[in-house]
Amino acid sequence: MDNDPKPTALKRRTILRGAAVAAGGAAIDLPLFNIARADNSVIKIGVINSITGVRAQFAEADPWTYDIIRNKYKNGIQIGGKSYTIDILPRDDQSSLNGAAPVANDLLLQENVDMLLMPDSDAAIGAGDLCDAVGTPGLSTMTPWQAVFFSRKGNPKTGFPFTFHFFWGVDTLLKNYVGMWETVPTNKIAGTLYFNNSVGQAFSDPQRGLPAALGMGGYKNIDAGSFDPTTEDFSNQISQFQAAGVQLQTGFMFSPQWQVFWSQAAQAGYKPEICTVAGPFLFPSGIDVLGARGDGMSTEVWWTPGFPFSSSITGQTAKQLADDYQNVTGRQWTQPIGYVHAQWEIAIAALQKAGDPHDKKAVAQALRTLSVDTVVGPVDFANGPMPSIASTLMAAGQWRNATGGKYKNDLKIVYNGTAPQIPVQAPLVPLSKLS
Image (tube, rainbow, N blue to C red):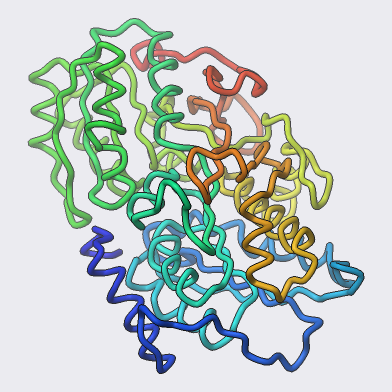
């Protein structure tokens, strides 16, 4: 875990400078590399994800996804009348902004990859600047687009020269949160708490984040602020929420922190009616570990087998893709499956549209104007909220203890106000009705 999670401008410059020095150049004046290849029939695609560390769950589906891509294109992919093989080069940033620097240096300056995929938030921020500096197309996801765009000082008029990001925005998430909450009567007193990193900062932003959404929804916000990664005692925050009569618990944190918070809440007798916290409820393992007290946790829904979309690579529906993952791995489907797969759909579409996978400027221009239907829904960079950004669909859901079957809990879509094409599967149930 990164003990200093704030992605400051100083850190970004340090990352660039360190990578550039290793390559024998300067951070600001890195040239566009065009290293001769031993085999021009190979497309080298690097991937930086959190294979280890606090966000390792986000990378669980990566090896299975690589097998899909390798099998699909085992006889080559046709681009511009030529056949190419795809070489996938995965790297681990250890769930750390600083961990992204050396692996980005390796892939961009040593391996000279044709494209860099960054499913992890620290990779998007830590390696994105270097992609732009050396002129290599980069594609990131699985982080609210504001956290990447504004942390990297994106230009609202031009975006980034070589890097692109697709995901839903905090604004869309907040609409789903508030819309879901309004289906259950509460005293409209909310308690907020945030993990102190770039995503937590985006969620806590007074103008764009949860405080603004709560205000517009008529909720009183009991703000307990941010906490550091080493925090293990939430008793002060819980006491603050209890004293205020909080019935809606929300904010952002990861599963290990929520486990501690929720256990201490039980000990203190703190019982909100709704728990909607971004982060800890994305994965079935984050719910399973809570036992019976995981019943009723609500969350943002990026992707589920219930999404009515199909893969442009394999033709599989969302349900078929999830079923395949469960059959092959023996593990329950997780939300990142859809976005890790969709990232490859976008990458392949951009390489084909460019006509020459080794022409990095052409690939970047293809991404800039790309519109493709994926297993997570439509992805349209030409009409995004900012240049270089494509905003995707999402819904809101609630975990319920399963009544039968192989897995302990099921995620049900309970609100679809921003994406009516995604079917609602159940109503939101207050926690007091589940005990």
